[in-house]
Image 1 (cartoon, helix red, strand yellow):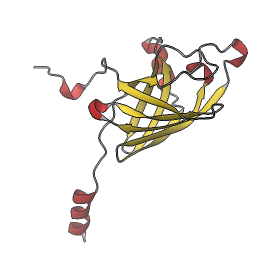
Image 2 (image 1 turned 180 degrees about the vertical axis):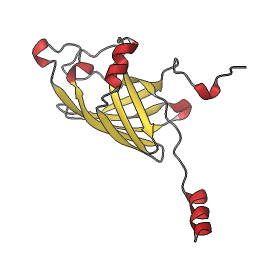
Image 3 (image 1 turned 60 degrees about the vertical axis):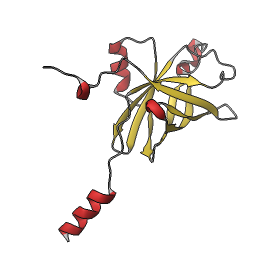
Image 4 (image 1 turned 45 degrees about the vertical axis):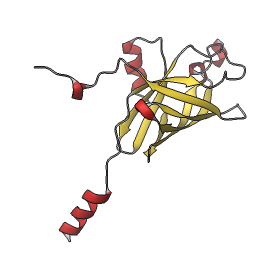
Length: 153
């Protein structure tokens, strides 16, 4: 029985490819009634097929980013080259023109993307308060460290 289970696992159970950690998001169109930030970063943490993520403003320093990363706001899955993430994010991450009263306002987002060539992601995002899904793409950030490819001879 052990041999059968082992053979099945080796032949049929494959770990998903690793995703990059940080992606620059590019929206296909301007969000209605919104002064969008220049760049929004999608930060993804992967554990097999399970994903946690968050949107991070590009202008934060590394200490602020590490504090935000402790509390991911998006959860989802990675299956067959498809990524789905959903959750609540602060409105100010999508719209710079929120006033002080609006700082705690949240939006529900649902992000559906596919992995393309060069680890780019393409898909769409649904945002509460906006009647239609918006096309979005994500490009891996170039400054990510990859310890597997470093050479320390």
